[in-house]
Length: 387
Image (cartoon, rainbow, N blue to C red; front, top):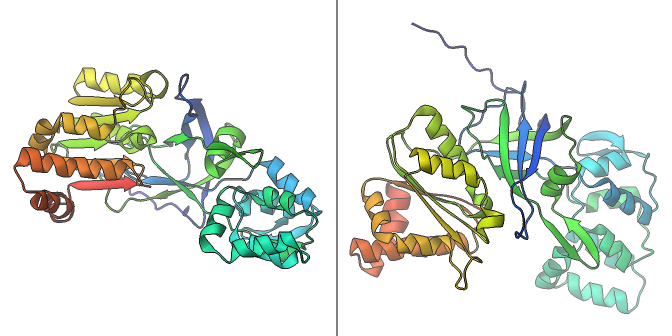
């Protein structure tokens, strides 16, 4: 009988992340796309971290050095001053780089600014904002600390006053886009880099901007940990599955298909993918087309909303193929959806109910019950990874 070497649990976790290396950073979107979508490969060699298809990778990012330096200058702080922050004692500059979130201003900071402002119209106007929850949400949504300090110049704060007003860095969770079976020492991520401009200044997402623009290739500069999924697992190898993953929602399904290919799973696979344009936004097109040609992907249905006059989305493709989709569900297929929770996932959910009613011959009430109760809760074959 062969013996297997037991896996030693990793010492790395959310509270003690592994300093991983960024092994690859390449764009997977292009003209005419308006997005900057990247494929990142994170090297976790030597970490002992183990991941499964469906898991997420937690990334603890650093702030852009230029942003930190601008804040230090506006507040007249000494960058080299020793302070104790979330990660222990370090210089103030290092603490702000790694310990706090600076790309969006915190509500506590805005409220403190009101207290520091001299009496007058500016103080009254900002005071009216901070006493209105909706107005305060809108105010902080488009501003970072530099915006506020420029808008209300001359406010005097000490380092001891400032740090408790700033939100500590929180990990950004990304759905893993690779299977550990063919890639045990690397984690692949599919990331849309967030870039925008407000109040006359260019801004970027904390984690996506760090990975795209600031993390040096080959150096241990990306603190990471694995966040196991509670429910978003592959079915048994012989069970069919239907995957709906537009945009970067494709990530876990790339992992699912890599794993099914590696183990030689016999279950049928149906992928729905969508984005704005085929030419600019068909993420991993060559890989998925090769899976289709080889038969790993039984079906590949795409919806590129801007490639024709009438916008077409993944839920439209589902409805067009409703009879076949219903047949798969009756054969025991698992139904997965990953991506935007606010609109896409809701539209997919409604499409699923419509298909159940039309092709299952169910009343509107029974169709809702089938999707929300039977498929989701009783049989646990309707699984979501939405955000």
